[in-house]
Image (tube, rainbow, N blue to C red; front, side, top):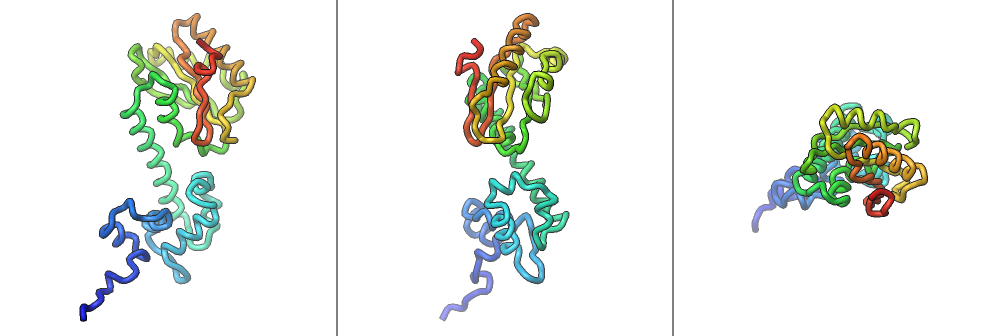
Length: 228
């Protein structure tokens, strides 16, 4: 009779071994999180802790919304484990953003939404970013313009075009998120878009679009014909 090796028993309880045998794409969310957690405690394994975290946050989407201080209230999750988890989340956002920039042209609203979707869709408050382009629509850079509710006192053409002029941008795109998940523009969104569009015409820096990011959805104010 063939002997059963210890390493063949309950591979699913040891995600590193499972990854080596079956590939990382075969791991569940709990198993991936357990690798980050690394160790359990006297009461439960790393897998058990991972299951507790995802239960507490209602899955990985909720994990992105969770504050570090709240995560550390889960028994067995201290500052070191919490920091590792949040560092991995941030790294995945940055990788997603880089891949989007490499893969897509910035000449369509969809390509711009692809760049910022994963970074902005889970934010609990509104943030406004300015994407700056050269004459060939290549990305120069993007900068954070404001945090908080979008209104005329926060997003002023002066601040927007100061950044664009400093970086010799030929065109700009405004990108901001709606924490509600619904990307449909508000009256204030439309008002600010038109204000910046008109200012850009005077300065010779075109507002190419204003993209509003929702939860997996986006709206383009150019496609909606609020600017032409």
